[in-house]
Length: 94
Length: 390
Image (tube, rainbow over all chains, first blue to last red; front, side, top):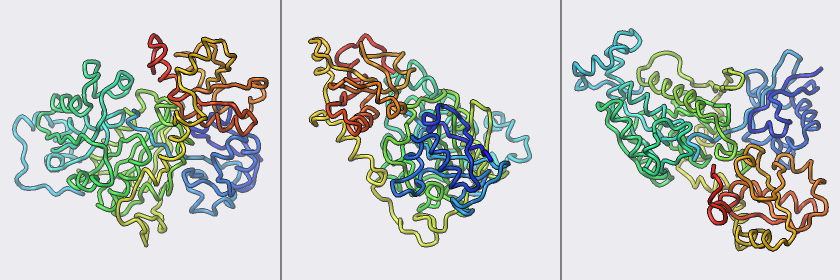
């Protein structure tokens, strides 16, 4: 079952400039693992070397942060949308 | 909500005329307009976001507006920093901003803070205002502003932009979460590109900045539903706003139940800004070559291979003669194209991305790969000033 993952602008360089990718999985963790198998460069931007999600990257299931659901074990269905939301510093832009 | 109207504040007949479109709305009215006049807002940065924020808040009649910046207006600012104009290039951003704001509304008091905000001055500067609007462009200042706002209990109207995408929220109100609840730690330097590296649609800060200004006005007047506990993402390409839920993290080191950060810290260190990038761009290190050295290599036909790791759009603006383009993001998958090139000089715009590329190349066996110190910007400054800078 393919589920849509929304890719934020700063990470699109690692997904061949696609703003949405599809991956299979029944939990958020499986989904992200399958996605980073397809787009290997994305892995080090999402995960630390110890395999944990980086703390400046938040994963949302629809409009909710998975940290407040079941984290990476949060289950997903075909109707769900998963978004990756990284921190962005830009403002004045020197 | 945050401002109590002093009885001494009143509007002149001229001000009544100026604010008449506010005054006739029941949600603002005379009470709301007097609250605006009694209020003070601090704009951190008068760049892309700070421009619309400061201009609209001045026009709306916020009584006292503080602006913090230490930069000078540059041609590359004008595509989005609409408070500054072509005649302002080379002037201090604060002076340029003050002239515009006074022209828009001479009733507003403008406080100019010509400084880089730091842990040693943040409390003094922020403490004097009701609301803080964060329009900065770097992680250390973002975390500094956040922590100072939480510790001072000041609402922080946050906005951030990159390319076609913006983020906006209201943090650090008494009931709401703070920036650290959303992102406990910053990314390691260089992992997330800056606007200077990645570009930004000139209109984008206009959209995000006007939302920030709207939220500041709503907080002052105390109307509507503020963007607290909500994180808004705007995608200009799809023309879509998305709203995500935001919660106060009970374990947040600043605003959580048992805070561990109770005073301002060293934010440069917290964001890891110093060590890695500087060492890699240190011209005295053996990993680097200077633009002068590269010029000699090229002139003497020493067979040096020049690799440009910027994006194609940047390569189109200006490039070092003979340089081959492989953007940093594509490098790991295209390393095989580089076979046979032993002596390699890698460059980008200013030397940060190329330093990362050199690491990747050395790990892949290109032990002689070197970084061009200062990137193409320094090449233009020193070797070929006829090329355009961006």
